[in-house]
Length: 264
Image 1 (cartoon, rainbow, N blue to C red):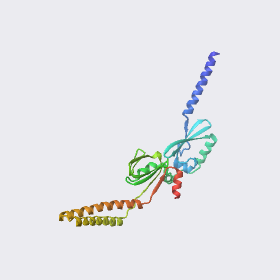
Image 2: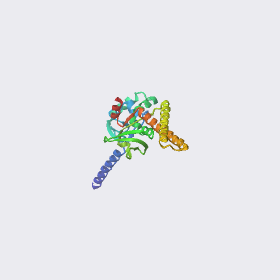
Image 3: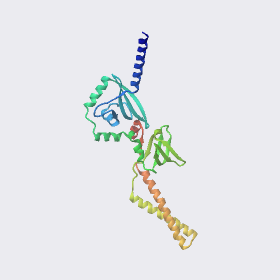
Image 4: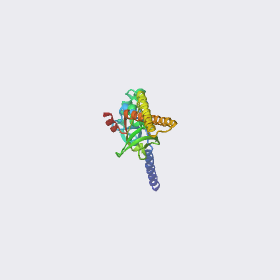
């Protein structure tokens, strides 16, 4: 009798332990043959599986019990990956599989068109493509703004030269950035600005020559310095004017912010 008592207790502990292991390591479930084990952002948008999850990234499905399937959903919140969980009973999950199997497969063209609109998934690519040396304005999730020249983007951090110091902004703390995706070019303006600035520099040094009356050799030296200085000022004026006249691009890191920006 005592042997049976201990045997029953041992079996009970074994069952509890085995159940705990199964809960910790549930089996991953294939959603469908054409989707596989992971539902990505483009597929989710096309098949409309989790429409209530903003900034959806991916989802996998795990069998916790014979009749319980749990979806573990990854989504982005200000570029931070977070996890949400949703449970399906067996009938609901099978109904989902049937619906997906009867829907035409997503094509590469549809996938690419969706990805262009899923801006939050392209955060790092967008930031890497902002030209170094460009004037940017970053809004922190706290509401604080950083304005200055972009020095670099490295290890998920923006380095921005402000009038006072170099500011480091983590992209996980960034809510929105304003920059100019493409700088316009006006060759006819460039010739006019460069030549005007060079002539202005030359005239200034000519006035200086008349006031100081230097030797003949120094006169031409001063004129050369004035024209060169004018060209440098003209180059800076041209580049600055082209940047200011270029169309601003605003990139927000939440779907709600993007909708607001698109309406402006």
